[in-house]
Length: 264
Image (cartoon, rainbow, N blue to C red; front, side):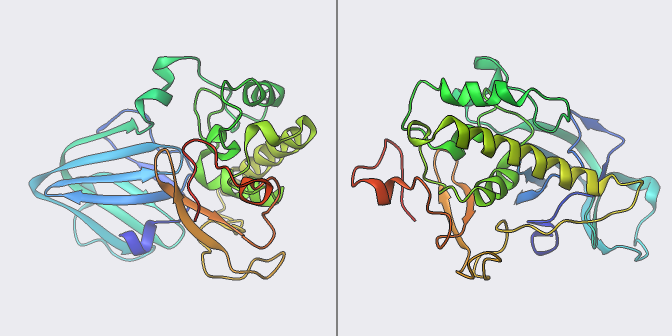
């Protein structure tokens, strides 16, 4: 399932026993973990699906169009990408929850605007980033903070940073308001383009990513190799092009890293 689903956009999710919000169409699975009969699927927007299997339970993987080995009536959850369907049979529990660290959880403060909403006021997002209490915070981290903005997630944050040539180590205090407006506008447009493509009258049309999941492959803009590392505070995968995403990289601006920063 890791090989088939990680890094892939979710085309469909269904469950007749789900406790919690359903994963959204267009979101990308970043992690799949198993501990005994417990399975966890983590999407790029921080949503976690946990299933606890009964003794007769299983997660089965099929190519789209293949015949299932068990009856559809036994299925308790289903995750579909463009090529694969993962089906959970006989689960005792199916639930979702958010995985944000406690100091960034929405319950500890305001909740930011949802960029997946086509009518969102993007100026609110820009102002929230500018008003951040710590100017040494990386812009990428701010884009993943649900108190500042929701609906973006790790995948589309990476794509927006690439589109604007901003380094993933760029700091809030170093960016001009005009560049931040451009970043938020790009982020909103990229997110909506991908979601609209998957919801286009029931026809699945995928827009290829520029950096996410393309580590080791050539950048379509500068032909350098796409890089992959992890970054605090949650060590989620960070994809970027070291050849053309150099704007406002503190490692090129000065020799003193901001608190919590870590180089590749």
